[in-house]
Figure 1 (cartoon, rainbow, N blue to C red):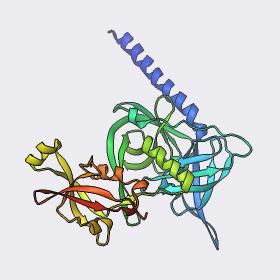
Figure 2 (cartoon, rainbow, N blue to C red):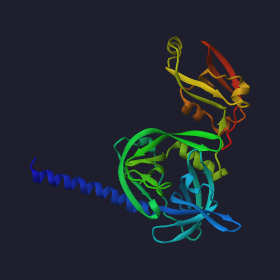
Figure 3 (cartoon, rainbow, N blue to C red):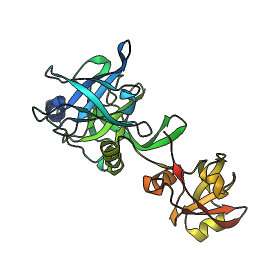
Figure 4 (cartoon, rainbow, N blue to C red):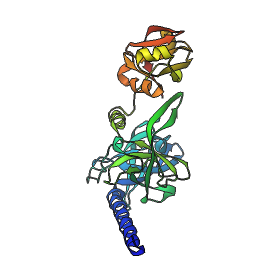
Length: 323
């Protein structure tokens, strides 16, 4: 390939790249807003922070990061056309870092973004971030999916939860991008930007079945209910003979049992190794977390554990996790 041909090929590739980013930007900029949040007090309205949010329904519902609206009860949404609308919080879930808010759309339908499916993402895939970093409304950056399957610890009060399958991207994110959109090349929102982990390292909560379930709970109840056993544990390899018999390599090693918790009432002890819950194999905290849904609250579950080389069955009744 000659130098001229190589230059033409590189120019064509850049044009194609720019075309994708431009198309996604044109589509999403009217659908991602800057939010300025605050709280009403006797002395007046006190600002609590700012960030971004994604319009995901024509009647004005916004999806954002929970930490953007933390400690706030209302705010203002600024659209890229200069329009401002009052924001009211519908619900927030600090343990997934997701929140739903609403602006008034009674007089006109809003352009709404389409929520995609992060399960289809691949490492190296082009993604576009849209938000309001540093208070600059309507900012677009682009990059690639740097990694998938990352974990992000989220804490709310005494509760700690691992947000799984977080998207890592090198698209430039700065304070204020939180709550904004991470989109694929079709313009579908595949993530809600949540954190700046370092230079060239941004994280986004993936849009998927779990996210939709959380959003539905926030819309319906204003919160997300989760079951709680009351243990701290980590993945631990199974002894060779047990591993061969069960056909799997690991379980959850119980490192701590919270006094007075459902786990303590069931008789779980530090040093136990949880093999399965209601017949479903568990190998790490994420597996257990997926089973601790709202329908498990107050319902007895069967725990099969390995204790000093012997398989033991216990029954526990999960309580509700207080966020």
